[in-house]
Length: 513
Image 1 (cartoon, rainbow, N blue to C red):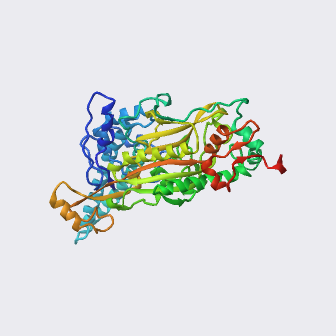
Image 2: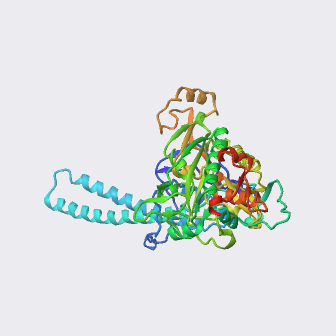
Image 3: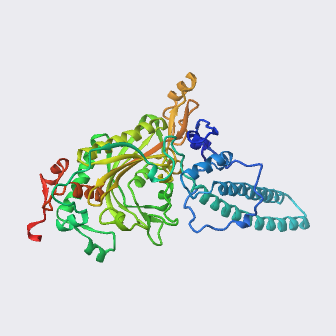
């Protein structure tokens, strides 16, 4: 089983928030081997562990020994993120796993030794004793292996709940503590009329049909039609063209992925209050973001440092249960179960991720500025970060019809949190010595999975980043509410007109008025 390097680096960044300095050993070469043993096994009986209802579909490469070593720091990180993870329980289960694994290994060695003794010439009485002992050892080993599997599963459940580290500049607390990084444009002043919300505008312009969708599929689904359908296609084409010009390779991705891939990307498709639609009697789920299938492209691959960063942009359909969404926050197109989105995704060397996170922020800020929107750029606080995010920048556009700001984009640096499960690695030269660098150059063509092929190279995890280039329904909301006119028409932003055949104003089709 693959072991991660020490996780203490994940939590060292919390020195910014706490007075007690935390250990921060440098992440070194990717290690392979069995779980390290412990000299302090838990005293709790393994029988106290029960099968978890939502068992993970894969074994994550979690270094529980390092979590144990930095337990207080890990617990503090969970606390500032308001996470339900229980690192202490994960450590208890790890210790129990070490104990029952040792028992199983001892029984297996005894069984093998017993079998070896039976190979020679033996008296019947002695052979019968060995046969009886072998049967007893076989039964005991079977029970012990079952217990190992049971404890390991419970350990994985707890371990996979532990979130990523938190960037030292991330503000602590809830959403109200977000740091304002930029404010672009100003709220529009409407003269002579009261701005309508996007639902009234879209329905009057025959751009959307919520009622038919509710009959055909259910609440929070919709039909886009006429200028609404054309506007969706225009936004997708515009966004793909913009990010493609920035060097992002365009993709269209599957809308269905394996639950195990979702879990490896930090989602819990089978967990309580999940946002994921699961397909009944199937290991498959509907994906909530193209980030997941893009990460899946590189699962279990070893990349050369010279290949990085890898910039991708994908158009995909997103499906989310949006459990609990109600009221104004869930009105109309703002919070729906299915929508189209253009997503940017990056694989990079650890040294590149902070700069690339800023690149994603700048791209989004340029795009929404060019659309003529008024929006805020926020450094989101610790309690608003998902499990995988190390730091997250949100952009919230002013929506005058809803009389509030609404999120239109989110850019996250997930560091190595996702790739530790997807096992996406890179080989790079060890420049600590001239000899190592020279050997690394000679071994550059090493085989996949070889760790770079020699003493001059090391293998480590890459970092991943993701950002919303265009969440179509929310941009439609912002356009309708900000560019509406007194007669109920809507001005088309200049940037989108080439993708709409030169359309400058959205009006209701004459035959449908």
